[in-house]
Length: 379
Image (cartoon, rainbow, N blue to C red; front, side, top):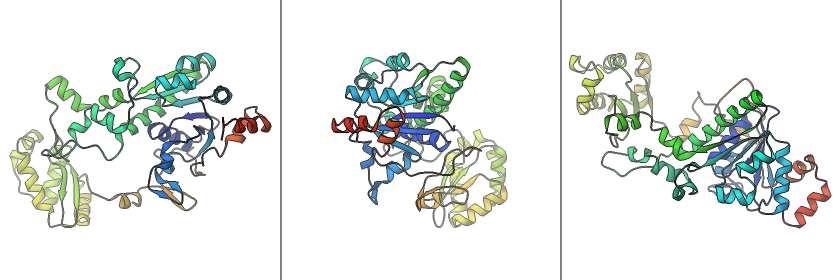
């Protein structure tokens, strides 16, 4: 994406994570922040004066601090947009109207732009939902996933991964790329709204069709799978191992690996589903005295999909994982490695660190920027 300029008017997680992915692929991303800054700059823990949360989502960007609530600030934003290819924002409609970010205005004033907005709920949602905030926990709760997460006898559980925000972020990158492809064909920009509620409810996939077609979405199964057995996490001598028996051939390999007795009544998945507790007990008894390393080696030898349940520390240092190191600090790696993925990563910017240079490059003089600073419009 070298040569593409993206104006990032997002904050918190979904939007910043999406634009960081684009920056990882070579796009120039200019993060536009209010004088208060993205609130995640204050999310703990704070290490060496910087938020670990903010650092995870904003590398390879430049920061411009503009008060878009002022007419001068909105003019400065328009100056930026005239030089850009893409605008991404996650501002709800009432605020978007005040900040000059309404899609209708953007498309009228900047018809070349690919404009992607992230919203909790779609523009066609009922009025009482349309402009409500779409924080991850809210969308996880509303979109049904939380009702399916957790142990059978426990309460609903939020996914530790901010899955609602992550799904939205991936769709933002998809919408940007599709918009650029469309512009290449038509010569015109476009607007796409990423609707978090719609996206995450669609992500129920087979859970949703089980409800709509069979009339029963099932319930919480912990780590188990509603349609496959065995498919769970099982306790070992020193931890846990996850096993995914995705078909009957794998079951036969699992039986061989664990030395389980041959039982024709368990050869077919639907038979195992009918005897879930029995099958799980067989597997659990066979691994409980083995270590995670022993299980991993045994299953790898027999071609059984399985892995030890690792801590975050173990996962980020796994030999199959490539992290990013900036100024001696290890950060999450690039999600997608391509032939053009950048290798010269830069740390997340300080608030407003690039305001002057970016505005001067857009046609402002240094005196103009100094005056805006005196007026409190930029920082």
